[in-house]
Length: 174
Image (cartoon, rainbow, N blue to C red; front, top):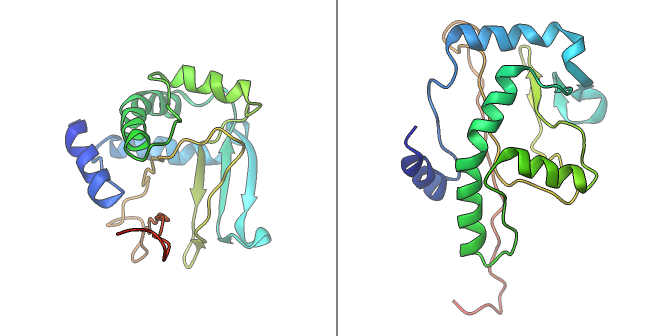
């Protein structure tokens, strides 16, 4: 992957597409894992909580090999980007270079549950915009994988990504 190009997209747009990280067969295998209750620690039916319609499940440790591998592979270049952003914004927080070191930091702060999750939507389902935060350790970037094929598995729908940007106060110099 061309991480310079990905970083430039993130800088310009706040998101970037990384095509072909998973083959169609790998997407199907991950999607099929949703039915295996042993892989998950918790199931959320969004409508019960006012989160939208549909459901999701949080993976349990040990994570499935494919999920763990993607997480560990994507973390270092994303940590570089997050560190560069924090430096530019004069934010003191820096993220370690390796995912295992960041997990140790999270666990030391009492954040011991895995956060990767898988969503399941049907026709008309949606997820309200929100942030899931579980403590003081917060990594500012997320990876989302579309496991279904829009040409084959569904019609319509959209993925909306948003961010909150700091606003200038009326007394801020321009």
